[in-house]
Length: 173
Image 1: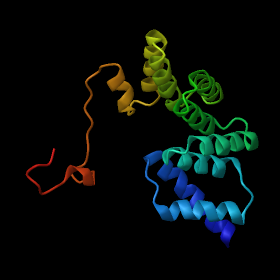
Image 2: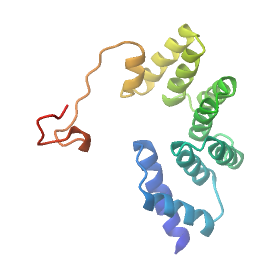
Image 3: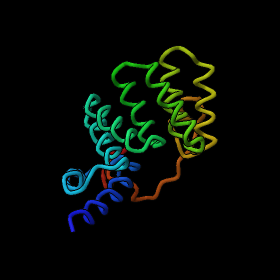
């Protein structure tokens, strides 16, 4: 029963990872699933993402390396590892991780975007621009890439799209 619950938390965690929202209950479920069942590549990837989002880059590197050891062509884990390396101020390692993620899953937009950010920080503007363009070609909704290219872009949102709009207030943005 605990292993089944862990699988449910794993699927739920993957959706939340993509949305950038991690309630404590999902984190607890993933942690319990890791105890109840052997770790697999996806579980290590999600736990590594959580560590990265919490600002613990060293723990994220450890978990993401474990994810890649368990599933060597896990492009999302490789992308997250690149983000952790960039957070640790290791740009060459970050670029290498993003490049491997692109090699394994050339249809993903995120590794192009993050590699572009790292290249931009290194002052390598032309390859960064190329990566932003590649990211947009694969993931047109990646608004940060449009912004980084200086392209004005509109996003259509539902009226009740986000609590941050501070509805029913005169000072709402």
